[in-house]
Image 1 (tube, helix red, strand yellow):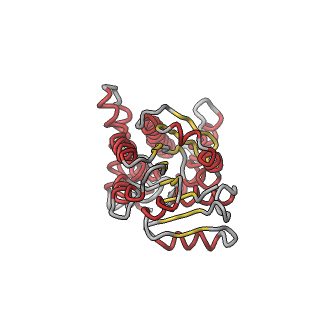
Image 2: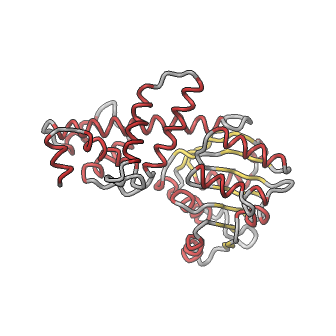
Length: 316
């Protein structure tokens, strides 16, 4: 056994690190969890939550990688990922012969390829493993990992145990880094498009005098039923958009997917329309929903609507 590294304890990373500890993959004397986060208080909170586990906090991502054979990374945005990866004390600075990096963020394919090349140029190994799932699945170990890259990392017993603790399924799309990212963007573009259509459907139902809760029952009883609709629908009707997957992150992924479709020569008018709706919601300073859950696109639908119900909802 050896220390296991984790860089990034945000909305997703916190739950993932907790799973490594709660499932006894890391946190013992011979396999401590080594962590770093840009906000150090997150590391302190993790140690307070697991006083009986061995958790080492480092002063930089570089120090985490240097101390561990395998390091998982989960950063929230492409900007944060680049800064942490390429910084003087960043992830890449800690890579040397035999080190393994597993990056779980959702980035552009070119970003993943660049990280792979730079890690391998220093003698390390790299595997992309973006996840399908949000805050709840991260905390309950129900993530789906979409992987590509090093087969040695994929086959490593510690990595397999870690992925099993953090997720319910792992898919390996081959040794070409970028394929995992492509899969993730397909999933998230579909999810965002579904949410945009769902928001418009609920707004229409309410605006023509139908009871929203009853319509959720109807939707849940037919062929269009969806766990996402069942989970988000009741909260949307109440205006509860506590973030599990922030709207600004959903829009980022949809924009990346639109770009990917354009480069692939694939018609995506529906996805483009949904992406534009998310963009308007993200940029709406009056609504202020960029950091709310992506279900808050519903509020932008109502804002753009002219029905009496939508006007009343906005004034209320």
